[in-house]
Image 1 (spheres, rainbow, N blue to C red):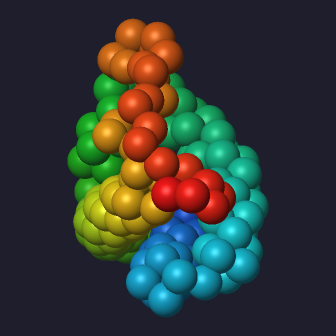
Image 2: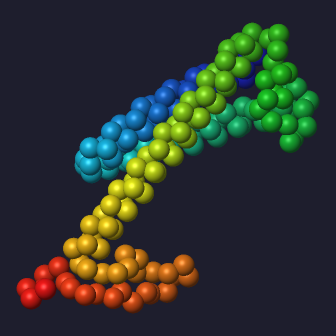
Length: 164
């Protein structure tokens, strides 16, 4: 079946994109740890390019899955797993399953890296807030409350205050 061959090619391309994204997430982590903002910006920009490309391949995969669902007489709400089950015994069915498993695994690794990167960034922001608080002598570090209202900061001395 031609659709199965096309689906295999699409899944290979998606796996390649996820592998590139994983590598970029590792580079992002390194840039965060080293405080290299230029590298961080470049990495995020490249991730955005990959996301745009992923959307194109995802649409193609979804279209192929819809076509295969009709060909296999599956209900419209059938998912990718049901389509994979119907390809059993057909050429490339094992490869499709392997690609799916690799993609799922890589997505899990990317999620783990992203959670770690978020933690690193949050920690960095807390450090910056703390240093700013110490330098300015303010008693609160947030300018906004839970509902977005301004909080009034009590300030005992200013950073550029020559007398304090």
